Image (cartoon, rainbow, N blue to C red; front, side, top):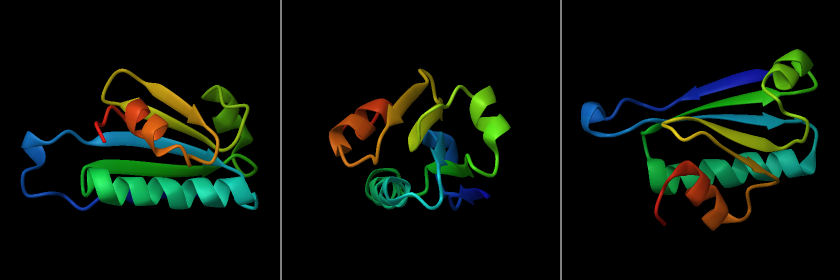
Length: 105
C-alpha cells in the first residue's frame, strides 16, 4: 500500500522549504502505526503545509524498499532538502526526528 500525502500549498510556498520524506512501514505492525502517528503529529506541529510524505508498506512493495536500502521498519528517510537523513524506529524520540529533518525544536 503506497500512500502519498501531499500538503496543501502554502501562500508563501516560494519562501518556505518543502521537506520531502518517505516512511517505510509494515502496515500491520504496532511500531509502524505508532511511527505514522508520531510523524503526523510532528509534521502538523512543526512543518504545517511545508512537507510531502509518502508512506510505503514494504510487504506490498519489497523491491522498492530493497532498492532504497531499507531493511528495518519503520524507517523514515528524508529525501530533501539536503542532507538526506534516516531515522529508524517508531519516531517517539521527537528531538532525534526534528534533528534528522533539519528542524530546530
